[in-house]
Length: 245
Image 1 (tube, helix red, strand yellow):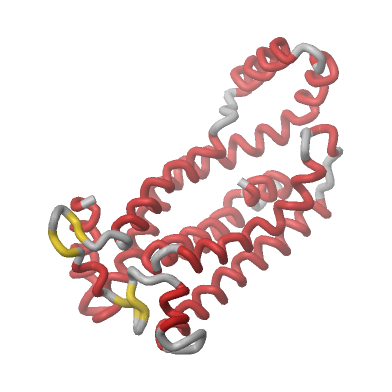
Image 2 (cartoon, rainbow, N blue to C red):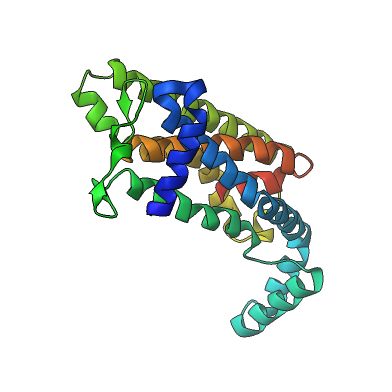
């Protein structure tokens, strides 16, 4: 974790002339962008895989009809189909999974009072009036909703709500424009009802984690929304499914 802390501190030093007291917060945003750039090739691969799986949905439905009562043969047939079409069933999960270590590092870095036996100096850094190691409850206890620290969270909640609303509207329109038979993809009926609302769950995460981790979440969520518009622009249902993932 000390290496990670050093990286954040070095980025903050580079950004200090531009952002002054909020340089560490800016460094977290830049770090998040670098992580997303690193996994972008996997996101592109996941998009290709998702489009391929949607294309294969009719064939998968036929396999379910043919081998529905024989799960072993069904699984074998699915693996053979994916191998033939060069589609990985796990490709869509990789970008999210690879981001988890960075998120947890950010969370622990700003949750620990010591790093390598030394006091954690990063906890003294702020974004305007909000300490990066505090969460929304701390902000409410020091000035209320519209106090100095609370106002920072108000801005973050507005951004998350705007991104979630964008995802919600876009997903609903995509599904309405390209309806699919629910039997082609098992569980699709329930998924179409739930998936437009999933982005709003990010509000809870932003409220309970340290502000540094919340900045990571807000940045990566906004990046994901823009990235999906680009990667899934020609595949509405695939894009909707990716939103849920």
